[in-house]
Amino acid sequence: MTQRTRRILRRLPIVLALLALAWLLWGTRGHEITFVYALPKDPPPTRAEVRLFNGDGSVASELSWGSGTSPAQPRETQKVRLDNGSYRLEALLDFAESPSRRVDRTIVITSEDERITVYLQ
Image (cartoon, rainbow, N blue to C red; front, top):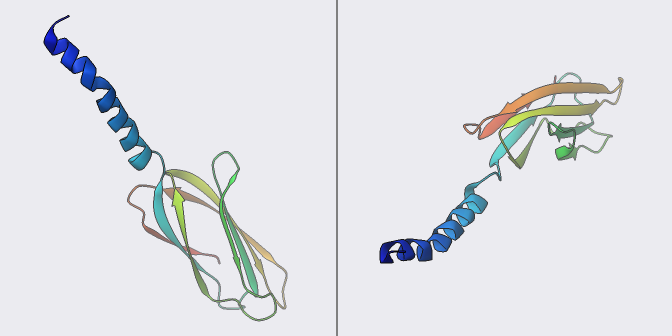
């Protein structure tokens, strides 16, 4: 084995450790996305529950707001860290004078997405 080969082999663990560290820091952790949920105005819901499901059916995020007695805030924001891919959004809107309404949507996340507005109509 030449001296050059030994030098390369000596440095190889350091290079591999740096690559592993880079993968941990910038790898498959996903990126932060701000969701803005916009509620219908007429009639306004008194409570909203939103769940975002991964492709395997597990819950990636969930949020609920509103007291159930007075109108809920018309817009609510949520910051989540998600990988690129397709997600199923399921929302349940409760109303004071009418039956609850379920909203189902498919949302596709790409690396360009930073803010997504979802109209829960």
